[in-house]
Amino acid sequence: MFNGSFVALVTPFTEHGEIDFPALRTLVEFHLQQGSDGLVLSGTTGESVSLSQTEYCDILDRVVEQVSGRIPVIAGTGSASTQRSMEQTRLAAAHGADAALVVTPYYNRPLQRGLEAHFRAVADVSEIPIIVYNVPSRTSVDILPETVASLSAHERIIGIKEAVADTGRVVELLDRCQESFTVLSGDDHSCLQAMKHGAHGVISVAANVVPGPMAELCAAALGEDWKRADSMDSRLKRLFDILMIETNPIPVKWALFEMSLLGPHIRLPMTRLGEEFREPLRQCLQELELLSA
Image (tube, rainbow, N blue to C red; front, side, top):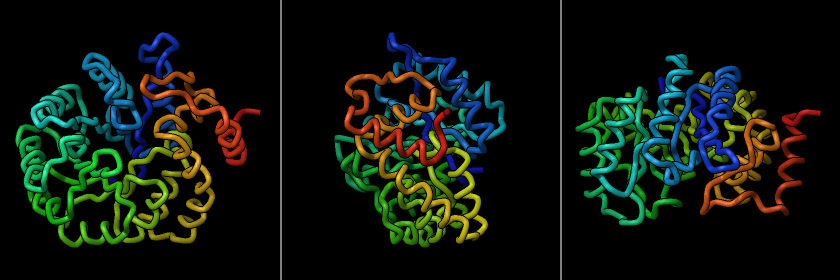
């Protein structure tokens, strides 16, 4: 259920700062038509920390209804607070999410025993599967493979989004964790290498822009068609680079604006893509034939 290319979906806004629900509907339909294997809502790329509780629920309600079970919908529910993460995970289940993506608590930098206790507390109250999200570059805390291995024995902790771009980390996770445990790459650049070492797919920023090619890359990798997977990966490398030229999701939202899929709006403290990067991004999109004539 959680294999392949999952898009870390952006949240579109209107010029007045409200959720642009027509654009959101267009984006979801785009992914359904282009073959994304699943949607991740209200994560880092979805500007989760800038959403109100009402907005969070509205997004989930509308997307779950539109998707209607065709592909899995995963909701970001993590925070720096264990209690809030528990509440948000219960809320996600109540609004129809198929799983919860729970980031390691940021800023307060818990120890490994605190991380394990945190995820167990969330999983104990959850009615849906939990995917641990490890992204030390954002949170300043790294949940280690031995801790993840212990958590993998919990019936509702079914996988990890691992954003440490190290194939050795993937191998260690797969070696230590339960056989049924799912490892998803959290880094577009290294996702193919991760899959060559046993990862089951990716939660992808680039899939916002190229959902079809990312799904094709993952399908080829899962089928061990490495020639095709390598070809797709090589074709997309420049896009992977340029989508990280400023802090995510600044470049990817501008790319989708260039593709006429949403407006250019983003919430403070994030700002629009720097003018010096707009033409290189546009050229990259043109090379991939993603812009209308």
